[in-house]
Amino acid sequence: MPFPIQRPRRLRSSESMRRLVRETRLDPANFVLPLFIAPGEGIRHPISSMPPQCQLSIDVAVEECREIHALGIGGIILFGLPESKDEIASGAYDDQGIVQRAIRAIKREVPELLVMTDVCNCEYTSHGHCGYIVDGDVDNDTTLDWLAKSAVSHARAGADVVAPSDMMDGRVAAIRSALDAGGFMKTPILSYAAKFASVFYGPFREAADSTPQFGDRRSYQMDAANAREAMKEIALDLEEGADMIMVKPAMPYLDVIRQARDRFTDIPISAYQVSGEYSMIMAAAANGWIDHDRAMMESLTSIKRAGADFIMTYFAKPAARMLA
Ligand code: PBG
Image (cartoon, rainbow, N blue to C red; front, side):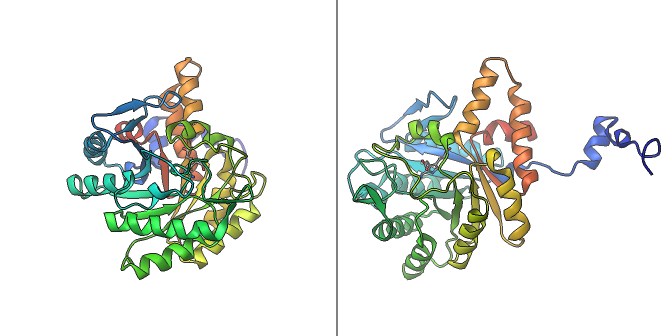
């Protein structure tokens, strides 16, 4: 029964009608806001490529977390800027490290807010790579040890979820067994399972001061062209004990999110709307080339429609306010 019997426009005639048949809804509970924690006190240092995001000292981050919680946002994910870096990323697994101290302060002051941590070494190494360098490349199996120690120290400080983002082989199994051995069998792992070597991380590397000093991350992060390989990475991480998985970046990889959703039907899937995705919208909006609020909501809706249950996004606060 095609036209004139079928007229799909009937269901688009008013906002009340559109609202009734809307298939995808955003909820602040499904947003996770990344925070960058810097040393010092009273620090709110603007990240110029990601306005109005800032690097925050722990005391300021705690205040920020009260607001984040009040907005009903699902949680935060912490990244750290250590006071000093070295070849062996010691700041990453130090119980007095910047992220470990931030976790303790936030869980003490805003205990109900879900605190996730990014488990990676690139913010803590002097060379900016995600692990131990041997012959100019990241050595997988030595790096696993650092990651496992970091995850345990985050859990010990009170992290609710640990999220490895380094793309080493076997890291989920290594982290799971270290957590269990340390008595943290209840701490879930959110694996950045399908993380692509992406140009869209550019602004983040300013934010987290983690630009590799030589080479790039293509020997560990995935090739942008590969979706089948992404399914393999996810399957392996689930076998190793991941409780949730992530696809990253989000908007350039909506097909990967959708394939993951269709194939792995019974696990939570998240997606990371990364710094470059955010900065492009902010820059276009600042020029008056695109409407900020609509671009924000449409981009988030597309990620959820593709199949993500929750979204890491720098838009968490303004989007939550719009949904209130
Ligand atoms: C750490 C890490 C990165 C991002 C999240 N965790 C950077 C990278 O892999 O180079 C990127 C997040 C963003 O761009 O917003 N390895």
